[in-house]
Length: 257
Image: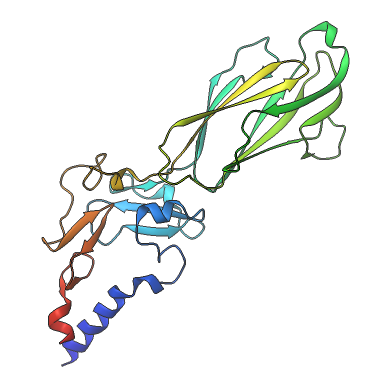
């Protein structure tokens, strides 16, 4: 009798996972998890009970054992892809791998190179104006302000003197069924005409949930099954009707009758 009660409680727990301890654990698919800015999906491909959606501020996802699983979307990272000397912008181009909902900040420097510049204002402008991406500039304008303020314009910038701007980027939302591709945002300095290229890649889809794939194409073939009673997707067993549990090991029909 007690065994039957214990199994019943376990089934009810599994069936009511949407009422878990935080908003992230209630998200049942990798795609849902990715589109929640505070969450990240951890896939542990050698186990059927370690995967799921976790809060980023409660779990250091990047320090999970890489030999046992992976995190999606991965940690945001910036790579300089062009940084030549004697250019007005430094660097001239970067590649930013960005998590959905995460704000990433990085510095760029503008330095007038032509003597005819003299002393004048410089204003940063960009060519991306859709609401899905937020782009902002901050600077103390070479000490003209006590601390960096949000501004795209600095006055009285002298020839040969550098002024630093901090660029803050955030992808607020992904478009429905948006294909993953690199967006190139051009930032120009007026009236100089010098340009800086921000190549931005935002993770909007889960590879393991893409149409035409089983499990995850990036992972080894020896992923665990669900005892033939469900489908293994992104590290989680989605059990057929009448079954529950991490590996679909519980017959809910027998227990509940």
